[in-house]
Length: 448
Image (cartoon, rainbow, N blue to C red):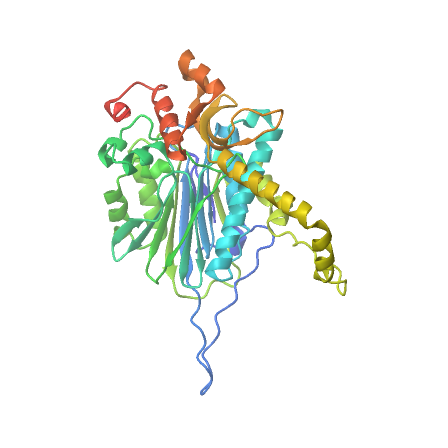
């Protein structure tokens, strides 16, 4: 079920009928749990855990468009917060949840982990290619926080500053760590959590999908019946304190009521950003005969549906493996002794060259720098400028920092790229540059 209000909100839950939910291509019904075993027969395995969920997305009180997307089904949940302006952000977040929708609900934790990693890489590549093909979408990207159930384990996939939480025994604990400049300052002990809440650069995201080289954090933890999972964009976590999140989740037993209360709290706090909330209660009951995949936010808008429903996304993720060689062919090892005797020295020389090239490549890509791409500050590794026409570097992180808002001196340095000793140093440099685009605050000057 998806209710569209006049204020741009969308509400959905897992108790709706299949006809009212968003069913993506290729959805299949979950296998019903086995019945009681006959006398003397081995006991049947317990049914896998699943989510009884609710989800809501609201445009907020300030933004004109909703760039957040959400996805929910009985085995996985996801929230994505688009970056790069409303057109690019909408499409990027839609692509991200569309890729996550291809993750199957079966398999071992290792298998599902591989599928999550493949989905992240796919979304990153598709966003990067989409940006390259459309000048109007320059700078597009998205955060992504997702969870998937495998048996009785929970897999958490995260990149950016959307968040995941687990409520167990009435205590709310974070499942994710923000990939932001502010979090790097907190980790280094340079500012406190209280200072971070009002820092002018708290929205600077250091890692996000888009750019073709994103890497997500994927972790596995135990899951139990009665657990409650909360996923949200920073439109909620940025304005509602942790203690209030915990209180609301403990107050409302029904996930729909909990979701509505959380979004309403964000709206009461001013909701300067889009607000997307997904709550999943972990239950030990058979899934419905026809699973429901629910989309909310930008991904539910007709103009963005093509990105989610594209066969190319599913085909690229589940494409065939490299075919095996012809059966019955001659053994390649049978002629190795003769070849080795004739080509031993050239082979050893070539091997030495390859080793040297590998060492050089490792050294090159251990170099970090901060530069400019598409009028935004970026963090890269390798050699920033082409060498003899060859590109020997890559952009790792695209920030939201507009180069045109920086002083002329900083712009000149960035055009030639600023060297950094490590990725952490590069992130600190980018953060300091970001401070120069906003009024200086005491927190922004700490440790500078």
